[in-house]
Image (cartoon, rainbow, N blue to C red; front, side, top):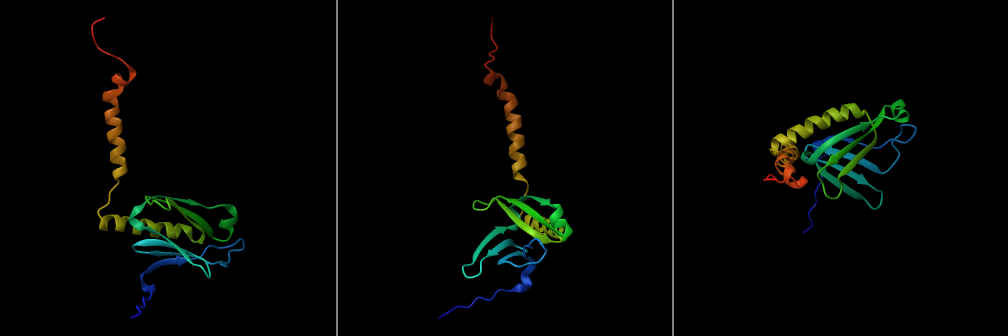
Length: 146
């Protein structure tokens, strides 16, 4: 028995391609954003896909070089807590500011849905608090009679 799985394109929030130096999308890379994940699909005959779950994104950065700004494009870099791709670049895409706002909403909704909070900040605060207590010991200061 053969199972066929059809892609439900109605679940896509955004899809786009990187643009070349003239602002045209002539390549075999496609970026797909759903409510759950970001997918990068590359290739023509041999297709490779890379996924990052939306709630695992920690930080994003947008770069707008002059050559890309002329054609209304930009690059968005996403830093995620992912083992195989800790940083993903959505290169030379149209309307990067609009996509950044959309990503903000998707990330916030996904973190609320999965009850994920900024745990990395708690760890940094705990390290700072403990370091004050151990400072005297680490410096070799011993209180005692001279």
